[in-house]
Image 1: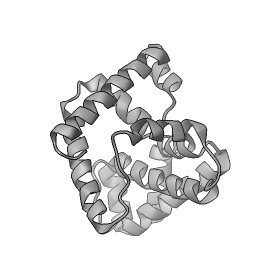
Image 2: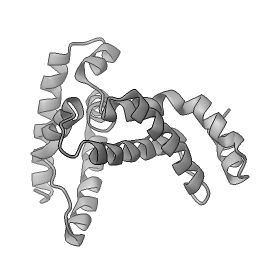
Image 3: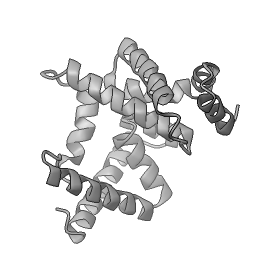
Image 4: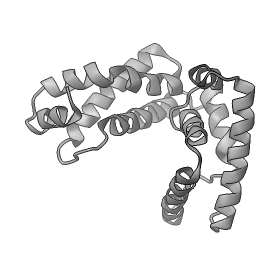
Length: 184
């Protein structure tokens, strides 16, 4: 079923929308949650939270592309669950990915920080738009979707060490870009 048809089901408040969404996008949405949580049961609960979030936000939203919208809901649900359940623990793989970016990014902790975070998001989007496709793909797979380097390397037919070096260079470019933009 096409995304437009699925969205029409949401707008008609048909419960079939959830079933069709799960059929078409269940696997990638689950992968996003699982990459962050590393727990099958928690990932399944986040998938259910994602379907509920989509149900509650469509309408009025008409997301395009639908998969990106669903992955964002799943990512936010997984991060919230992770913060709640692992407040004192360390989830090594995803924490390592986030720590890699810490040198470039600061967390918003005030209204001014929220505005700076929006400017930062706009700048990062601009930076990503300038990257070659493969660098952008690796960056997003690692830092947005939380994939492990070995999994990305398998998908690209390369070695995780090369990807690690590539990501290190991309982070340096990002830091220089953000400094040039006056955001660091």
